[in-house]
Every structure is written in C-alpha cells, then in structure tokens.
Length: 163
Image 1: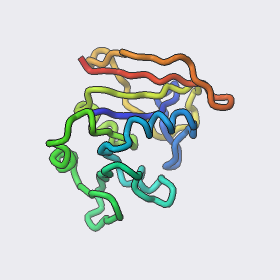
Image 2: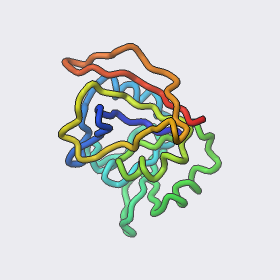
Image 3: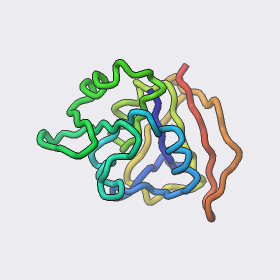
Image 4: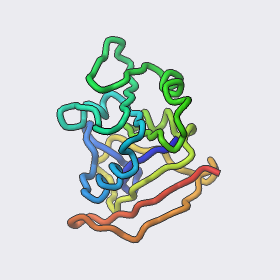
C-alpha cells in the first residue's frame, strides 16, 4: 500500500477537519496518483470533501466507528482488519491511504511507500499531524522533486520507501 499526504515542517496536515494547504500543484499530484485506484480514509476526511461526496473515479473505502454510517459511492468498514480484507486481492500499488491523522497512524506500518508533499511552512496552526517517517523504522527518502511554487507557498514532492 501507499500513503499520500501534504505536510508542514512540523508534520502538520490539518486544522479543524480541513487541510492546512490548498495547492493546485499538489491536488494535481494527488489526482494523478489516486485516480482509478482504491483510497482508504476516515469518515471525517470524507466529510471534509466538497459536499461530503466520495472522490470520483476511485473506489472509496471509509473507516468509521459509527455502526449505522452510510454514504453513496462508499464502502464502509469499521476496523483496520476489515479494511485490509477489502483490499487483500488488489495490487498494493493500487491502494492509497489518504487520511486523516488517525488513519495514517493506523495504516502506516502496512504501507511500502509514502508520497509526501513537504511544504515550506512551520505548520504552527495545525491540530492534526502525520506520523514521523524514521530511518530507524526502515523509511528512506528515495525521491525529491525540484522546489515547486503555488503563490507564495513552496514545496517539494518526496517519496519515502520502506526497506
């Protein structure tokens, strides 16, 4: 599996159930990598999308503790194990963990690659964070793009792989 996130220097990813950053270049990168694939997310992440609607052209799996939760165009599950069962026959490169914070922490050890957009911003306003990708846990930076710019914000696309 893969995970994909846009993070600040302090690993901040969101505040008040919204992304910290809305970067057109990052949105394009996200879409290029996840379209036609299976995405796994938490309920709050789904509800943060425009209209609370599933992402188009993807199989959307939502993990929630709410037993009666239902949403159009979404497969609902209630545990990590149930989510993993749903994707067991899908090639691992076709499964993407897309957030939020609790979901990243829950599935990071199941991921082989992490596609991280690293934003040159302190992230001081964040209240949700991405786990640290430590070399001691087998994560290595294998790719880093040239600096990108959207408005006054600079960032790089980075790929980390687990040894």
